[in-house]
Amino acid sequence: MPPLQSIVLVDTMAIKLAHDFGCWNAIRKMFRLHSVPKCVEEATRANKDGAVLVRRSADDLAAELVLGNPDRLQVTTLTLQIGSQADLNEGEKHLLAYALTLRGVWFLCGPDNGTVRAMQILSLLDRMVSFETVANASGHRFKKDLPYHFSERWLSSHRLEGLLQGSASL
Image (cartoon, rainbow, N blue to C red; front, side, top):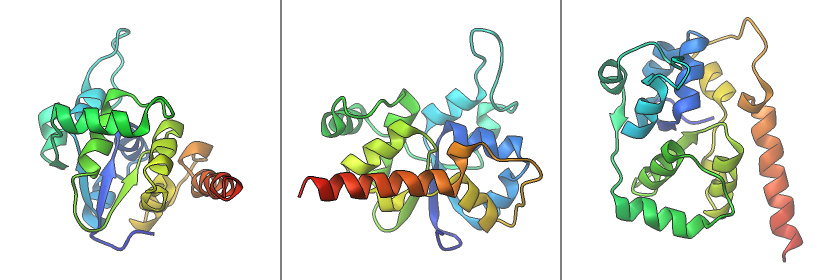
């Protein structure tokens, strides 16, 4: 579990889940939440069907986060580092590019196979944290079942798989 007041980078889905489960404010109080404008945009804009992930203004949501804004070179460098081995959307690419600029300890909450794979390629898988862990650390208790890919069990299985793949190549 990340220590309290640690930097936790949140992607679009982590932002959505925290709002859906009613633990956004609790998580914000326990951790220093960072993200990127692209994730805020993805969370607050309407899709082609008019659905919105988080029903708040982008400005209001952005005001509650520390926003990093990676430049094109940083995003391109990340893309070259991971190649075609990880399928990332724009928000995930921007968030990872921003993460690589941070000094010191940080954790990333991005419950997505592509993000996990990219973090493995970058040898940063130990910096991943599940949504379940972040929410539980903030004192939130789930009243309904959490989807599997947001659980600590899901992330742990990916870590183990990464370790096994790494040891197989030795």
